[in-house]
Structures are given as C-alpha cells and as structure tokens.
Length: 253
Image 1 (cartoon, rainbow, N blue to C red):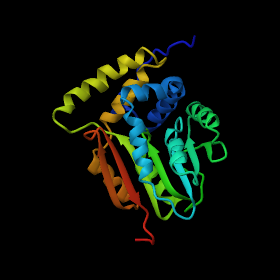
Image 2: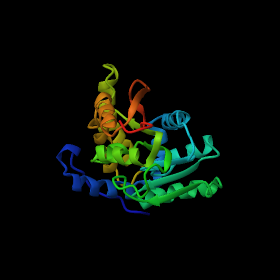
Image 3: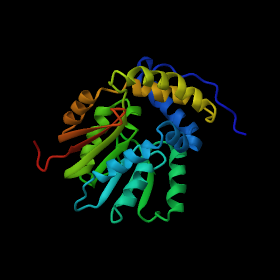
Image 4: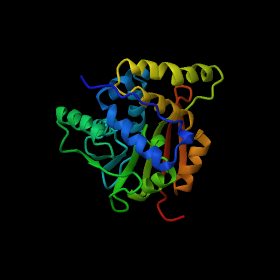
C-alpha cells in the first residue's frame, strides 16, 4: 500500500511564486489515482456537465485544432474529441503523473490518433503563433501563479478570430451559499479527501486556491489585458463555477 504523505502546505498568499510552483508540482504528482472520482463526488458530477457546456461553446475554423492547457487527466480534451469528431486535440501539462491517467482513458476509447498529450509549461507554450482555433483550460489556471502570462500565451497560439476558453471554480458571492461553501472548502473537502487520498493536504490547498482566485470581474480584466475581446462570462451553479470566453481579434487592435 502506498504510504500517506503527512504534510501541510502554507496558505497561498504566504508563498512565493517559486514555492507555489514547486508545491503545485508535488500536489499533482501525488493525487492522480483518485483525482477524477473525487472531482465527481465533490461536485456532484457537475464538473462533467460544466465541461460539456464549455465544449459546446467552442467554435472551430480552418485549423480544426484544440489546445487543452493544464490538461491534467485530460477530461476537457476527451470531451472536445467526443463533441467535435473532426478536431485534433493536444493536451499539455507539466505533471506526467496526471497525464498518464488521461493517456489510459483515451487509449481505452481508441482516440489515440486524435488526441496527443505532451509535457510542457503553460508560460512557454511550445507552439508557433496561430496554431489552434481554440485554446482552453479547465480548473487549472488558478494553479498558475503568473496568470497574465499564461493568458497571453494562450492568446498567442490561437489564430486571429480564435477563442480562448477558461473554466474555473470561484468562491460564490450568494449570501446564502457563502457560509456553507466556506465550511465546505476549509473543513468538509479536506476531511473527506483524507479518507481516500494519500495526500489530504493537497485538497486543503485546492480549497485555498479557490478562495484566493480573482473575482469574475477582475479575471475578465486579465483576459482583456491579454489581448482578448468580446469577453463573456457564464456563471454556473450560482457562481460556484464560471466559464469565460474571449476572442482573439481578427486584426491587431
């Protein structure tokens, strides 16, 4: 039996960028075995519906290519392949352990010819400009300290007129949900994860990362600063999750 990791991570706001990057690497190297099932349980399977909704908003053009940044176990990549059978999908992540779970899933579904996963850095995407119609990131950008640079990179690699799509968790602002969700993130989530995961502290960090993610208006501003236009945001499940959609201008603005 794999031993449990007895560790506590410092609060997000107390870590330097380098410390947080190292911690995120460790977290996602230690939780892949139960990551998908815990996501389904803790979201009441809404994470599946949210990805399906996001992929339904994708619009493909001449490249017929989709980039999934911080692909993790490749759930967004797989949903894109299912809904858009003529699209080629590339998933990128720096955690090999997470991607190994994704590889097993799309091999089982016989999608290896349409999906490829590569190890890489969201801050230095290894693709030429204008390579993809759509670049997306589901539940990953809050783990990237330099979000403005990540958004600029995603904007760079989509073609003019292409989309950048972000699906991310938020701390809800609904007055009835706020106290419950605070208890859920800080107490229920890490304790429940501790029954299954060998690194329970990882789920305390994940809750902390949601609490400290920018508010929707502020994150929309980051997307605009990255050069995106016509930015729309869609609150899901009373604002617990948001889908953000931005378009790269057809010509420089």
